[in-house]
Length: 350
Image (cartoon, rainbow, N blue to C red; front, side, top):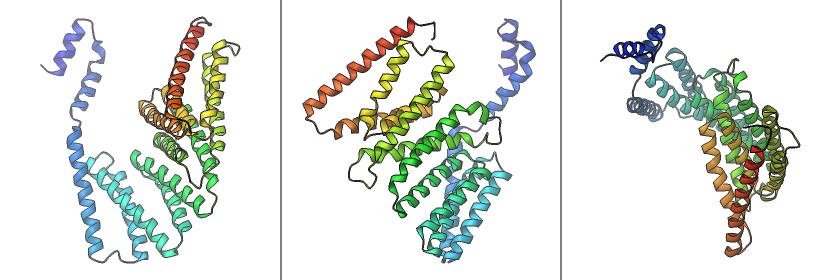
């Protein structure tokens, strides 16, 4: 039985609108012509092998043997990758080949600039400029995600080279604020020039934020003032809660709001030297609010890691830690019950 016949029977039984039949046939036919995922994977692997073989041939032939050749080769490879994505935007093979060539080109260019100038600062600035350009002109979500991460990494390298490691806290707060802005303004950004850019940048900001907070669970690092990140992330978390409550139209004198505020402020105690807890909660709330499972899952994973590390680093006996874990669980369950009870008694807010 064909798709057309199935739709005709559904229309006769009143389960489908007859005037939408041509549209449904076209959509289902297009879906049926889509390439299976395993075919896409094999094509992608073949593209990467082709690109690596080509780059290896150039290296063996001695065509890439100096700083200048690294820079020129990097520009050529990156330009070829951008051209492939613009000329063949829907080709799986061309897309994977462009990604492989682009990554190789970026690495060659950054290494070449660093070797030519013998300066880490010059290489970091070259990476930032190159990735900013690719964010705009390279039409690939994965590359834009990588560009965001490379830019953040280059900025961190600059901070360490200039011996201002504590400036990482400012970068953390900027990433958190940018992530919050992007996902809160998603409906607006989707109608602007940045419609293809904002999502990978938003994911990149979330990933970079949690990765930069990960060193807080490790002692004996050059970064020490984690309380700066804790205070800033707490402020952003309160801002997000304020936006949600305004959207719901909740009365500020509602007991549930007061309990929410008190609970949020109490988070500052465990997050004082472990701000990753607040960062993960911020990303988790943003993901849950927007129905974004990828953000929610990523944040939940890091939240578990940060909580485990917090309890592990406490200078207490195992018995005391066990009682603290049990007490924390009981408090969370009680707070959940109280919040739901007050919420149901409130002004009909779901």
